[in-house]
Each structure stands twice: as structure tokens, then as C-alpha cells.
Image (cartoon, rainbow, N blue to C red; front, side, top):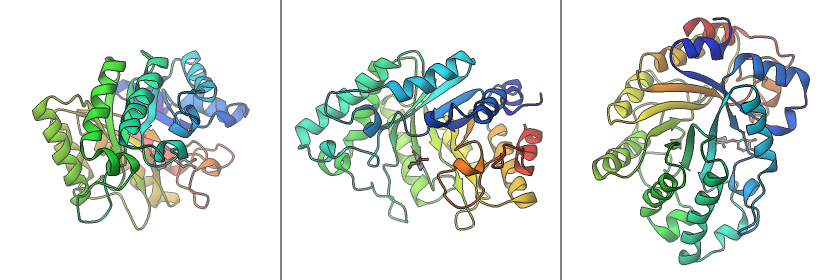
Length: 302
Ligand code: XIL
């Protein structure tokens, strides 16, 4: 196959991209998306501040634009994200524990119900663990007011809202075996042993010279898969250029394919000019939508 999506599909996987609604009107952006990818993740449009800016008042129009576009082209949609400390409206952080718990559960239920049956995988909870060696939870309104149990509660609420969506925990700096990924691993193992509904773990995979593709990336994906969950590469971008960047992209794709339960890869943007990293060239297409060496390496690894 000669596109990322078609080549991944031949391997039983999806190959997706993060999409911003405000770029869909750009002809080359839409053409590249439609040609190459078979899954999309709204880059910001499904986050709490976008869909529930005020308590109980939901606005889905920007996210719907992306979902409608994707469905019109036969692409699947990843949901990102329901419970996260960032891009969280101020009214949420201002709530006391009782209100916060009901606001969290209501948010999950309303958003998942709006998209019921339309999302293949949801990032139910994003980035709940601290960086560094502690393996501790990150401070957030949810963690600080509801305690460790908020993650489990979010997953149980999510399962009830859309029983057919795969429910994922998603994080960064968990791509190799380290203290942070060990902490996530311990949580997932505990959830599986107690029947807490979790189906997948997302590995953001934002790589740069300070945080390169780990040599034990495949082994780390495999140990999570061995717990009985799918694994997904959810926000891939790799700083660099030329052959070095290409080699890294090829290695990431091969790592996913080597793990039976690695069900798909999403890159965090299409052309370099729209990357969330304002400087740098971490994506597969240059600013004019030309395929980079990284693209060729990803495609030929599939
Ligand atoms: C980023 C978006 O790409 C930016 O446009 C936005 O300003 C900030 O968020 N981890 C995540 C993503 O889970 O939601 C983040 O996306 C990148 C880091």
C-alpha cells in the first residue's frame, strides 16, 4: 500500500493524525489528511475547556466538525481527553470535593453520550502521574480533592456511558521502562486484577534529544500488553530531521508492529508548521506538505 493508513490497515492497525478544526478549510491540509490517515484525534476540540466551558453547558460544534469530516472520509476517531489537569476551565478547579466528583462524572457521561458509538478509543484520564522517580500521582484538582480513587471512578463512569469504546489511560515519559511507567503499570495491573474497566494504555511518545526513543520501547509496550490491555502510540512526534529522524520513526513503527496488541499509531499533527512545538520539525510532512524522509521510513516500516 502507498499510504500510511492503507499500509497500517494491511497490518490490522490504524495510522492517525491529530487534527485541528481550524485547518480543515486548507485544501492541502485536508487532502493530505484524507489521503494518508484512517484515524483522527481532535488536537484540542474535545478537551474540557472546549466542550464544557461553563458548568453544565456543552458546546460540541468544533469537535463535531472534525468527527463529521472523519466519518465522511471513512476515518475512525480517537477521543481526547475526558479528565486532565490541563486545559481545564477555572470553574472546575474551584469546586469542592462533592461537586467536583459529580462534575467529573457528568462531564464524562455527557461527552461520551454525545459521541456514543462514534469513538474507537477514549483517553479517559490523561497525565495523572508525576515525572521523575517518585512514581507518585501528579497534583491536580481531581487528585488533590478526590484522591487516588478518581481514576478508577472515571473509568467506571466511562464504561457505563459508552460500553463499546475502548477506555485508555494516556501519559508521556512512560514510553520506556522507568519509575513513571512502572507506576502506571502497577495501576493497570491492579485495575485488571480488580475488574476496573480499562482496555488500553496510550503512550504519547513525544520524543526529542532530551527524551529520545527509548531502547526498551518495544519491551515496555509488550509488558503492558501482557497485562491484557491494548497499547496505542497516541501523540507521536520526533524532533530532528533527515535520516536520523527517519530512523527514529521507522523504529517506532517497527516497535508497534512487533507487539500484537499495539493497535495503532497517531502522529501529533500533519505538517511541521502546525506542530504544537513552535520551533522544530517533528512531523512527517514539511510546511508545503512534501513527504519527509521520516514519512518514507514510517511507510516502509509498515
Ligand atoms: C497540545 C496541543 O497540541 C496544543 O495545541 C495545545 O495548545 C496544548 O496541548 N499532551 C497531550 C495533548 O495530551 O493534549 C497536548 O496537546 C500535548 C501534550
